[in-house]
Length: 74
Length: 173
Image 1 (tube, each protein chain N blue to C red):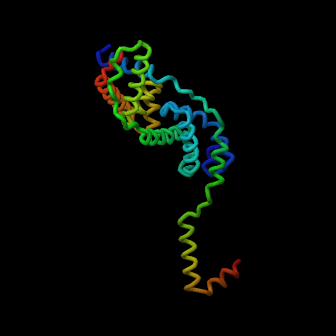
Image 2 (spheres, rainbow over the protein chains, first blue to last red):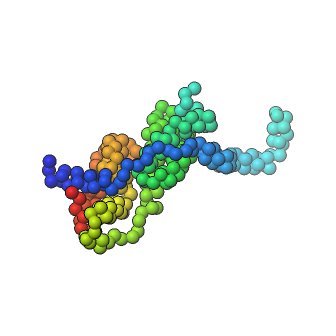
Image 3 (cartoon, chains in turn blue, orange):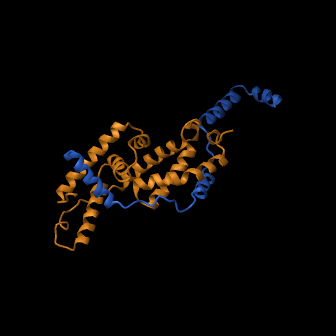
């Protein structure tokens, strides 16, 4: 074993003694928290939908008869 | 349809199944890095939330556990950056004549403090490699870097730690 390896082993041992093993068991189910966040998260409209709405508005203003064509096809 | 495909399409039931299946694993990973059960619980919840929000980026043929670990690791790094202690260490109490056990306890506390003052990236690599003995390739995958880079980080962490402990008059044996 080289001097460096010996020194590294010493540091490793010192750290292991200084940090006791962490309790790795989760104490509770986190799903209810996630569900609450999902409920609270408002439905966001993507930017391209707003662009589409804007373009439609402009089209209807420029060509009002489009409304009639659209209504006919609905 | 496969569970991961259903999750990627935004099915809540599929996401619930994944949360129940992976929450323990994500928590275990986070607590090994931050070593604080409360903080690790918060990080796990945040990881799961980010996973849901990024579901469209997930490839159903990918490794969900590895993806979750990577997100949790990034969040843990951010947590360590915020929680980084600012106070300086003093060497006064270490060398003073006290009962052995007390000296030992103080020495461990000094080592913990010196360790927490390492740059977060080095701290995470060193915690996982030296304290938790996680294989280097697993650490590299979680940090999104190479095994070589992880080795360098651990090496630098050991060097800095040794130097700081030496300044405090602590020579681990």
